Image 1 (cartoon, one colour):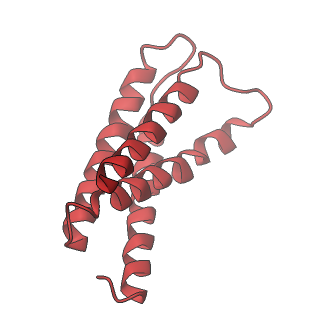
Image 2 (image 1 turned 60 degrees about the vertical axis):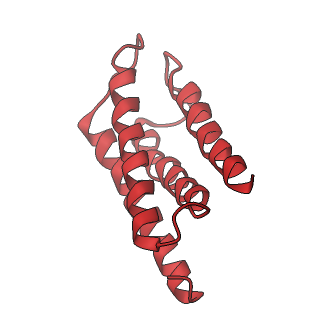
Length: 120
């Protein structure tokens, strides 16, 4: 049952971030450059959650990390495409790149953390 709860946490995180990103106007109190950089921790958090969620089913670290990356990357691409349908928003390749950067950094940190604890 624990694995199912973990997956729900990851899905909830993804759906909540999608709702927040779908507002038709960006918050004016956050400069656009900072808004762009926020993609890195947002998608890093999602990749970490996927990796955490999948550990119940995937014991091999590399397989779990690859699956977490693919799920996060697919969601990042979908999110940018979705934004093209929201008035006042637009998807961009820069944002996609920042999404992927966040995912890669999180997976790297997960791997380093597991390696340090002997759970490779």
